[in-house]
Amino acid sequence: MSTLAWVSGIPEILSAVVGDMSGAVTDVAGDPEGETTAAISGFAATSLTEVGEALGLGSLEGFSVAGKEIAVVVTVMGGMLITTRVDPAKPLAAVEKKLASVLRG
Image 1: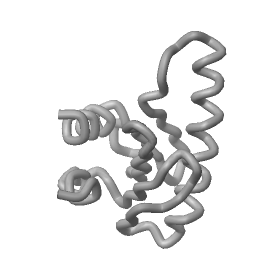
Image 2: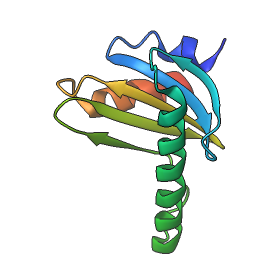
Image 3: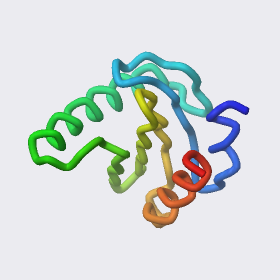
């Protein structure tokens, strides 16, 4: 089963993009700007990985950013990034927990 099939069962998720740290897109669902989303997520994940290494935090597992209009949760699995857009009215911690459960078991 594809990664998008796994995350599509989470109702809080509005769209999803699967890509890699370089910004290359593997799969897209519901995001008309999937290539841009993957590129931005890849850049942000690479930058945050470098910051984490400098601070001795270990490997990056993911990050989230919330604004007034939209929230984004990025989950890192190996070299793959799953970028999901979420309604900002929904609690991000709950969505992150569901994603971790679905993706990491």
